[in-house]
Length: 174
Picture (cartoon, rainbow, N blue to C red):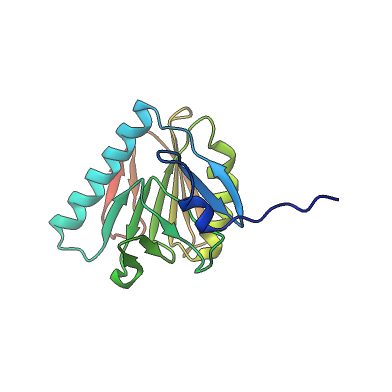
């Protein structure tokens, strides 16, 4: 029987220039370039969350993709969430975030559906992320996982979605 190869973060950094991938439990997953709607949503969330943090003199920082997140303190897990909100400045280095961000938003692409709804859901939950949003442009639906409250809610586009890590802050996705 052939043994499956286990990859590390060194393999991610050795990828050809311009090629992006994520690493989950030693397996490499290639990332397709995002489409225009995807990028508009990334920009929207980055702006909305960043403006809220700035207006309220918040301690957290928002980082849009590509931004490296080294989830488990090992060399076999590396992800690039579409949006990462990090409140612990000690986790942030020149290379990215070492440990779990507080809030992660992933925007589903046709090729990332399985990854965003299943693999990343499990990885983010076990890594200690407080809140995880899966934004599905095709379904016009946002699924919000609050791991602190052990809850899951679904919101259609066009309604206010409360951000669990910020009291009184909500976002309406159009």
